[in-house]
Amino acid sequence: MHLVGNNIIVRNFQEGDFDSFYRLVKNKRNHELSGMEYTEDINDAKQVFDRYLKLETSYCIALKENSLMVGIIELNERGMTSGLELTRELGFIIEEKYRHQHIASEAVELMIKYSFEELKLTELWAAAEKHNIAPQKLLVKHDFKYIYEVNQNFSILDNTDNLIEYYLLKP
Image 1 (cartoon, rainbow, N blue to C red):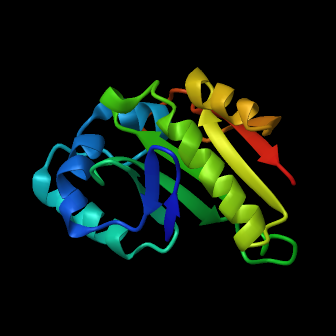
Image 2: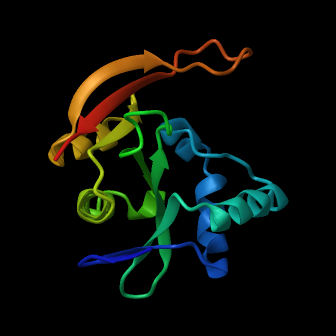
Image 3: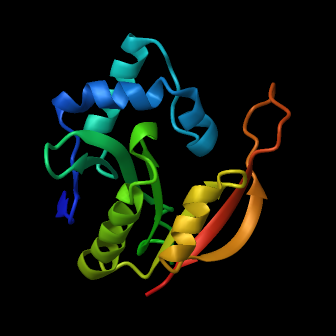
């Protein structure tokens, strides 16, 4: 994958991205906002990073000027049963110090174009934590429509509600 925008590149992960990746996974707020993996242990982070290097659905968001990784964007399968083959779920996270600089917006725009023009998808889904307003606004800005809310509390020990809002985009 190599998508070029005005200020960013969406590309495959490279070994040199580890330091930036580690900054993302050791920031607990990123986990709270997006459900991204969280660990402060560098060895655990290296194992997670090794998986990202191999994933065919996760990509690095890098600055065009210096190829520095500043985020992750994913285009995950929603299932391969009849009717879902041409749909994907879009997800993204930007390193804290690079937020509010239109980086996520540009990355989402590139992925939308790629999804519908190159992959010939019929729809894109995206989800955002209910309390995480910024990605919800970004999705609506890119014509995603709010569909429904779901409680995805996967932890037996944690009784807090994990309300996820789902959005849909069709060409």
